[in-house]
Length: 104
Image (cartoon, rainbow, N blue to C red):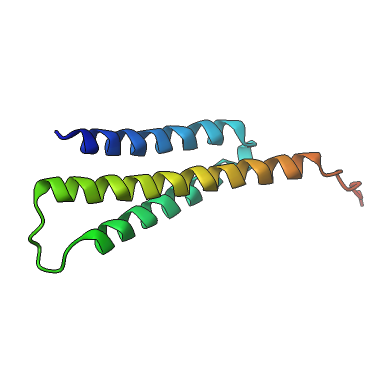
């Protein structure tokens, strides 16, 4: 397996593990939100593969490895940015004052 493919799979695994760690950090009702950055990263990675592929299918395996690596980098950056936004949003809501509860 070429080194670019190994790094590609490592980036994908790190992104998934990072989402799991952020999910463990979030409150119970908000943990599902880590799926949104993962979906965005997957979409960006697939789009990078589609845009990087040549129309005639004449790419060598080294070229495919490079395109896959670039797609995994783009997906990883998207997931990392999404998780950072998710953490920032979670911290902002934790610091907001809780409105008083009105009991009937």
